[in-house]
Image 1 (cartoon, rainbow, N blue to C red):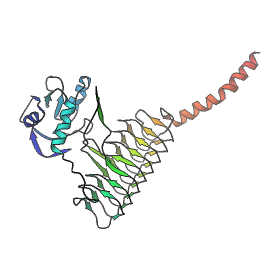
Image 2 (spheres, one colour):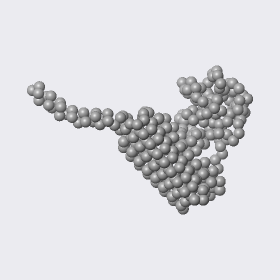
Image 3 (spheres, one colour):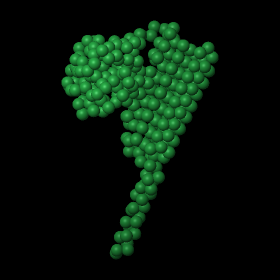
Image 4 (tube, one colour):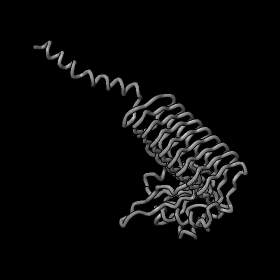
Length: 313
């Protein structure tokens, strides 16, 4: 999320009751998760073993829970609980307004778009030309939808990220201030859910087609011309290349990268990055040709063992 205008690191420190380690006059222009940060952004890290990763990121500023020396070119904010401080900054700059009408007055809907009955459209939503939103769809704040898009009934776009921090007495929710961006010629089936990014964007690339009952989690980036069958689930922050095919009930773990032209067969579970241009199957998914070769070997094993015993008798 980018701020409407920059704020000095010193003023931000006062907001969250933190100590500045570095340049208090440096200007902060946005807040983001570690995998989405850009120069001028602030992020947070509350696990010391990941400090180095955050310091090597594009973030100009990092909120930490240990007083350490600031790396060259960066400044730090030291406080007791970076997670709560991150939330406090988000809530200071992003003020969600409850919807009081079926379609917000701030929504920007192209005159050629078709909006069927009982569609809910939130604040600052943008819908492009010739897009068709079917009955009972819900589109939450700041979602951007391109032209020639079809969204089937019962789908919800822009729900909060499923992102929590475990505490001794339960879970703390991380507030979502990101968006969902749906590019041109995308089709989304019935009863799908696409979460907004925590602070960055969830993106569905142009020409992608999504079947019914698919869940796309926070911060996922889906490439162009992908094809997802029913009941696919993609966990947060995963990046999917162009022309990827995910067949029914495929599950993709968090923070992975799937290359271009990957195909994953039905009911597979993906727990690691998948290189481009190959087909995969199984849980955990491996190259499909390897899986089927192993399967054939297993099927042959009882007969081969029997033949060996017969020869030894």
